[in-house]
Image (cartoon, rainbow, N blue to C red):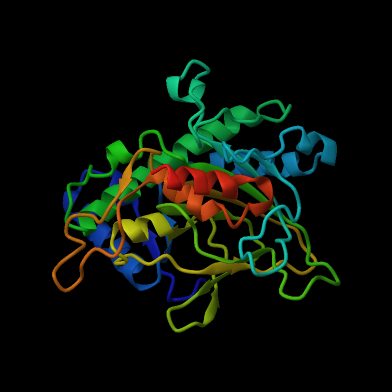
Length: 329
């Protein structure tokens, strides 16, 4: 069972007709966002059968040979594609992570004006040559996007804003659906090397689906590392740096890591809901006061994400692009 410090929240009321129950759910979510930044989401709107299909397709993708996976190799400008084993370091001060990943972003039509203009993070997805893979992942992306927007209605309610406050800031998001594969822990590894190094997530909220293999650990406010075990059918949900900044640090973006499993492979699927590229990340109404002034200057969503991704992908050239974008304003 999960730690009592990571609550399980039934979110069915968010999609129902009982306004009072939705407010109660929003309050429970808000309390978790303030206290640990982590909670489990149960009784949600993503079908269980679709989750199973996504995991099966993910396992099939990673089972391909290296050449097939490298045919859809990661591109920094779009934040899409295959990241090879040890291709990133979520904790830049430690050895590269023992995992491989595949990123999928918002699917855009080929004649989309912003796509044609080459806007950062609004790019063409890279699809492997696998029957059914694209459709499964786009269905899963859409379902998670819908759930993420419901959660933002809860955030807005908890923060005293109109429930639809975030809607126009999340309709063309820099969201990423990330498939993850962790091999069994090697007999020997570099000192301090993990499946995923200690980090906080960059965006607004993360919806993480896990298999039955453990490994995710969360650092409490007291500095203690606690396990976040698998809860069948539920998402592990956590607040990211962008929403923490938006709320003037009222919501907490909590460090976490993945310890490589011993003797077993581990698969997980994360949906990172970042805002629209042109969304202004500025202190939200009701999140500042004379006693708690705004702590951060306003920044565009794309500039914020670039700055957070840079250390992770220093070798990809993204760091230079991030600095150029920020210097340009």
